[in-house]
Length: 318
Image 1: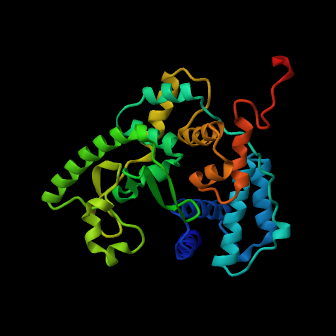
Image 2: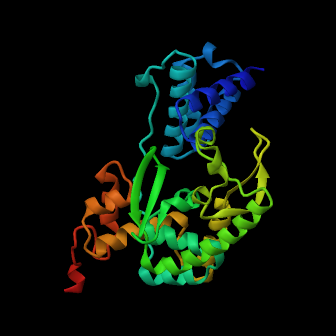
């Protein structure tokens, strides 16, 4: 079947270039939609005109956002350039103008109310999202060795853009984090005594450091409640806490706190950056803590400060 073999080749090419798993899923999904749109014809028999028609259909009939349309375009440019070896003409591929939206930010009191409505590991994850400015998956994929409590630091490995960084660990989170790690270690020790306690390792590290799969330093800070069998190797591993559990908990806490804002897990990261700027920290420091490649990305937070992006007082307040 055309789609099956093609999608397998897309996956192989994406993995060869070490793109993230989320990018792989997105590219495969867009190539599949494109093939269906083209009547199951193979993309090698199609070209610029068909790709432009597909993107136009997304914009006009499906009414997708500019960001979604551009993601689809990136997937198809990758397909033709890297998989089929027939680069498309960028001049003929329409690119959408993406909206630049001001992020939703919580006040300090709203953060307290939302966190106060959460419990257990989900509460601790949310505390790290706000206290350290983490993305959700950055928090969930933390290993024990990445937490440096004496130095009040978290080390993020292979974060977005394949970049490592160090960020701050809030002192207020330390007692809760230490208690949590004690409980996680007790469970890990019990599993080790029973011959389990293994976790998956990145890339091919399991061949270089075979002992690390069951080593405490490599264990997840937020392990899942149950172990699962790795479909590739058949080995029983414990994966990290699932993001949907935290997302549901945050959504319920926002409702419980009575907030009329569309706050999500990522809102804690926005609030972290904004509150640092309000506290007088310079934007370059905030850029480094967030892991932004370009300071212009960090500049968006200057538009949501309490006194406005330029520090201007309204004349109505004079």
